[in-house]
Length: 72
Picture 1 (cartoon, rainbow, N blue to C red):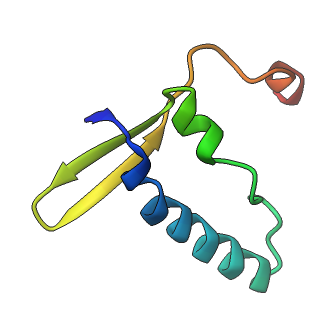
Picture 2 (picture 1 turned 180 degrees about the vertical axis):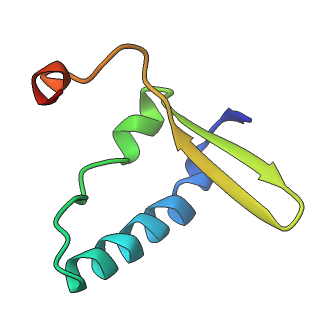
């Protein structure tokens, strides 16, 4: 796994958009268009795993999102 580069961004964003569309069609409002995004790439939080036959992407952040502890 390595830090993603700009060329890695279109594939996970397309997958995210397809997932959002499917979930919305099923009445699920869990995800939105905000995350992950190009800012995550610029911040060094987007990582890619390249394997023969596929690519995986993960967004990793040190610490918690602001306000996360309130939802627990």
